[in-house]
Image (cartoon, rainbow, N blue to C red; front, side):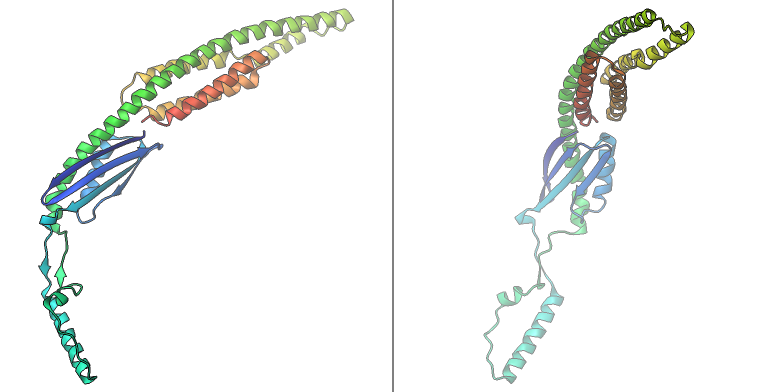
Length: 293
């Protein structure tokens, strides 16, 4: 879900740049740095982005700069009047103190803060600029989505390879479980033979019951079958269009649950090794899934 895009625009004596960048996130978190004098810009931009994006922490910034030729300067007559009154008062006070004041020029008066209004923005500017800035933002969103799509294609290739590898590990687990079952059966037979040798043979029904309990307790057939089912679900998700990130999040939790159970039931080094490889691969896949929208 990482991505970046920028777009520029100009008009009405202004130029501007729109930038969008994102990092991974469970939901969609939009954060804006916009000029507050363009009324209604954020709500419309938020609505547009929510229609195009589903996940990620996205920062949106818009910077505007007024062209020098378009910058207006106006005289603040009220501020000028106040400045002249104050200058007259200062002159009177100076004369009372026997002081002489340097002649004040028009430039000196113009330099007094507030006499000249250098405001670069107005409500008229905002109303005229809003549709232009939104059009540039739409172009930026297109580039942003395309950048995230390119990242998605790369992630899909990695995930596809990881899913194939998981399928091979599950086949290894099935083979290791079969070997373990044969070894366990042989061990039980040897134990029974020893009991017969010492003449301490337990009740046959009780023996059958205990053997069945041992078999059920250590059987991993269900876990392997569920892992196969999850593999099929993962491949189906890879073929879906639209947002699949949350579904993959849940599926990775299911993969991890079955791998943990497989390791806890394992009574052989081979099966344990496969289970640990599965868990390591699942962790790698979970990192990739965080990048999926």
